[in-house]
Image (cartoon, rainbow, N blue to C red; front, side, top):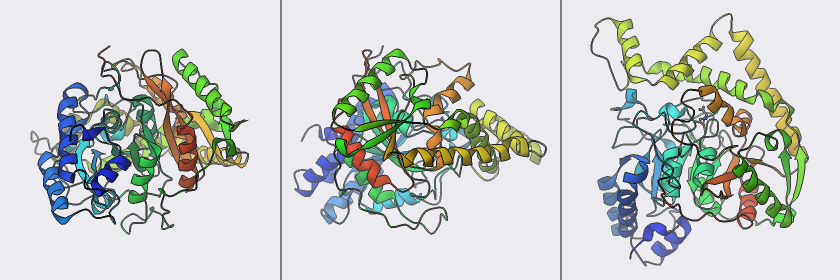
Length: 487
Ligand code: GLN
C-alpha cells in the first residue's frame, strides 16, 4: 500500500471505490508525502493532520459513497479560503490569528462531495503578487528547482500539486494566480468564468476579478473539481444560477476539429529563449495534430497591465479597509488613540506590496483623480472585452503563452515591482474580461523548468475549454515528476 500519493484523483477514486485501499490509507499517504517534501518546498501554511485523519476515519466507517464525487480524496486549499481549524491568514501577518466563524462556500462543497482537506497552502499576501515571495510567512520553493519561485499568488497550491503532496488543490485567480503558478510548476490550472464559482468566504482582493478554481495534474481532474465547486450560492449575488453541467462527461473533441486563435500581441512578446523554444515546439505539435491555428488581434491589449493595476488596486484598497486592527487579526497595543491604533496596526502587520496597492488604489479613487484613472480604466476594460469577443468570432478558443519567462530566482525582481506587473501581461486580459482560461504544461526547458500554454474561451464555455484542453493534453509532451534539484 505504498506510494498512494502518486495517484491522480481519477485513479484514487477507482482504488477507493473498489475497496483496494481506504480513505484513511490514502490520506495518511498524502500526509506522509507532505511531511517528506515540506522541508524542501514549504508549500503549506498549515497541515490539518488530525482533522484530516479524523474525517477520513469517519468516511471509512460510513463506507464508500458513490454519490460523493470526491469521496476520500485529499485536497489542499490556498489559505484565502475560510474554514474551521487553523487560522485563515491570506499570507498576511494581519490575519495571523484570524479564526473565521464561517466556511467558504467552495470548502463546504468540497466537504459535501466527500473531499478531505489536508492542508492550507501558501500565497502572496492577500493574493497580491506573482511569485509567492510576498507571503508574510516566507516563500514557497519551486519543486523543479528549489532556487526558483513557484509563481504566484497561488504558488503554494501549484507547488503542492506539482510535488505530489495532493492530486488536487484550489487557488484563486484575480489576474493570473492560478494559471501562472500552474505553468511555472508544470501542472494544470483552471480559472473559471467570473460568477461560475461562489466567492463567499474567500478573503477578497479585487471583487470584480476574483475567482476560485482548481489545480491538478491532468484535465480530467480539473473537471472533477470544477463540477463540485461550481454553481449558485445564495450568499454571493455574483455567483451565476446557470445550470452546472457535469464537466466530467464531455463530448470529446479531436485536435483537428479545433480552430485556435493566436493573439499576435501575446505571441510577439519578448520571450526568454528557452520559453520561446518550448512554445514553438508545442505550437508545431498542435498544428501537426491537425488543429487550425489562426492569428487574431487584441489591439487594446497593450493597456491591460495599466488597466488591471488601476482597477484591482482600487478594489483592493476598498476591500482591505476592513483590516483596521479592531475587527480582525492583529492589533497594535501601543497606543490608546483610535486613529493611531488603525495606523500602527496596518503599518506593522501589512507588507510593502500590499501597502503599495492600497496607496495606489486610494489615489486612483480620490476625487480629482477618479475620472482620470479609475473611470478611464473601467472604459478601457470594456474595449478589451470588445477586442476579446471579436477575436473569438474567428475561432473556437484562443491559445496563448502564460509566462514570457521561466520560474525566476528568488529576489530577481524585488527592486523592480513594475517589471513583475509587466510579466502579468499574458494572464490579466482574461480577468478583465471575466472569461474562463485553462493553463496546461507545454514542455520542459533544457534547464529542467516547465512552462505552459493557456486556452481561453467565452464566458461559461468551460465545457469547450476542458474538451479542447484534453485534446491538447494528448499532443503536448508530459512533464512528469519534479526533481527537487537545488540549483
Ligand atoms: N500577479 C497579479 C497581482 O499581483 C495577479 C494576482 C492574482 O491573480 N491574485 O495582482
